[in-house]
Image (cartoon, rainbow over all chains, first blue to last red):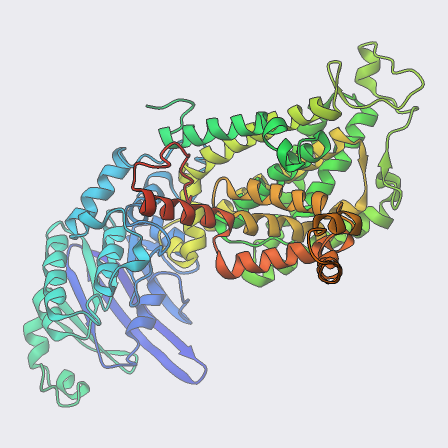
Length: 251
Length: 382
């Protein structure tokens, strides 16, 4: 069953055609990678899923509901969480608070006037947040200020913030960009564990090692068009894809 | 252990705070601040700054128009005195509500923008309110002269309960206790303590967490499924209600409301108070408000004669030089002292006086070991 269905999406910036008749079906419970050279329109496409950009034409349906014309927080409440290319976290707050906020958002909806209850670090939500931090390997830093983390840790924190919401669809924009090899491998293991829980993931990634260790299915985007979509093994052998990647020696 | 829904640390802070406020008459006397008019101002502007801090300290939205709500509160309170009763309770309740209603209207429009545009919008609205009060709405506000009580005021509730003030202008009184001098101060002090309690609860609640998240990264908050607009509006309305309450209390201790209370300088003052004390901290705004009102009253009262006697131990020529330089900073020139102090704080202690206290405590811990100074309440950042 397809959980995210993208049909005939076009998006132009001035004279530049960033997305050209993009069609995409994301199957529930799979890891779907979107690859492509720089400037192919990958991030633009992702931005169209979360309400940051509205496509000029076309439809984006999630779970049978259109995601177009609604705000980012409504899209999140519908079950879509996103990890950004540069980690977006609450830098002034502790890691524990960082993870509790999305949990409150899931429990209370987009707005609740909870002015008289206390945030309990040891309540159900506090405990769940600690558990989630331990899952991503940040348990010991729970009371540190998030802004001081290394880039890799920030990304793990952002992942924890998305996961505590039990999203139906998790969007990841280059989750291992700028990470050392060891960190990358940790992140791959973490994402494999997430995938085993049945979370549907869309991953934009440059690192082919990451893509081929994770993806169930790969779409290749070049100059705003999907030039190929298939299983990883078949994508490897596809001449069009190798062309798009300048000879494709690293495939 | 939990009492009043507070953690131990907060409870300790609250109890010490209440004790200091209630005994301030004796505690501040050695500094020349132990008289009721000044203590009333400490308490009232403390409430004003506490409320402002809910918006600015938590969400980072810098309003430059909070004096408008202070003024609205004062006018509402004076009208309540005129129409209903000289009892301060209905006056401050209505003043709080009026501040909230105005804040809801102004906040609804202003919060569509953030950063400097938000500040300018609030400033523009406050100046509009000021001009309305000063000229256009003269029938309601009595314009330049300011709104005053009159013997002929109806005071429906007072009349209904058979209270007759005779041929004098009555002061506000709480069931017979006249709201001037120390009784007026204690009334304000109790309200301040209640407000402080509300602020602690708010800071520790999920809403407080969301508001701090707004300040930290509003973009992330939107993508986390939180609609930040109603949260910021709630913060704006609550802080407007605190301002209205403070304005009402100003009218309770002195039943008079003038338009100058809404001027932009008054809005700027509460910004100074909050930053001076430490924005985003629980105690900071109250300390900042106290510090500014103290300087305003003490330094502006100094004159050359006092300075001459203070520096009389110096040789005469030196005394003349010192006095002529330092006299620039006192009396009318007390704003210079305030400006210099503010600059020093912002440059060396960006976290305000609270950061200064924290650094002193850390220093003390380093010098004397963790055992020393343990009885002092530890100020929390948030």
